Image (cartoon, rainbow, N blue to C red; front, side, top):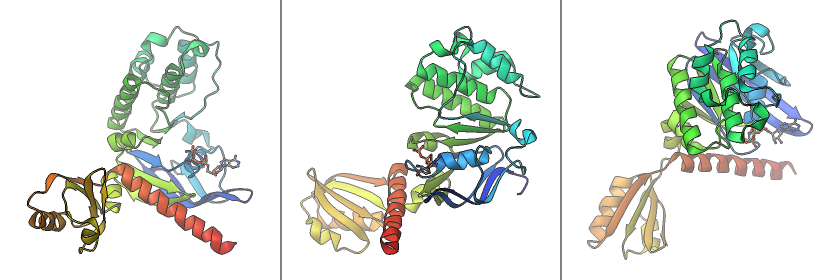
Length: 307
Ligand SMILES: Nc1ncnc2c1ncn2[C@@H]1O[C@H](COP(=O)(O)OP(=O)(O)OP(=O)(O)O)[C@@H](O)[C@H]1O
């Protein structure tokens, strides 16, 4: 573990009976970065987080927090956690929950500062159990950050939040990262990863499918989409060099290519009446879909071979 790594999994394998939830995952979280953990349902995101938190143990491989066993109290004092479900006493008022949680940490953030950062200043006197789902999520976020963590785990934190609350939480995450706090964010909202993450790890079938910046991930899908109105024959274009696919759909000619400039030049030469030309790089959503579909197909093929 080098000195910029705050948490890591090394060749981590976790099995539940015959099911392999994690199949040799290597993952490093670096100081002060926001790392988004993406993947379809059942990909292994929560299992990875649970290993890093010491809630479960790997069958083989290692999990480390600040170079220590994740169950060590010295490591746990340096993290904040917001999981998908939180079992907090419903009769306690928010201010009581906050003071209690702050008392677990050696150097907590100020009470008022925490309330403002998490956007709960107006909820402090309310009993936790009487809050709406989105308000409870904000309180959970406050409890996760009140200990001034060096590493914050946020498991689908914005689920159930309205747009305003979500944007405030994004701003708070950015402020924490600017302070040097590392964040591990699991999310199904790709625009959330796009807006916040310095690095993205995509899991699928318990394996790391891709790791890098959001742009790196986009580049994994080298194709560019071209859309235009033209009478040119789609089947003929599909046979052009560098054209991955060409089809007619909703009155538009749609082409996928890794060489957009050359194909656009040839299109314009071939059809002087061509209109409504649109050229678009593949988005994060397309890259994600392509990556995870490939992994699912490979796993299906493995299973068929084994059968
Ligand atoms: N306690 C458990 N017992 C049995 N199987 C489990 C257990 N926990 C997880 N699994 C299985 O391990 C695999 C990975 O689950 P995990 O919860 O890590 O996925 P995830 O990526 O977090 O999914 P989601 O997006 O749905 O939250 C799934 O197939 C899941 O059914």
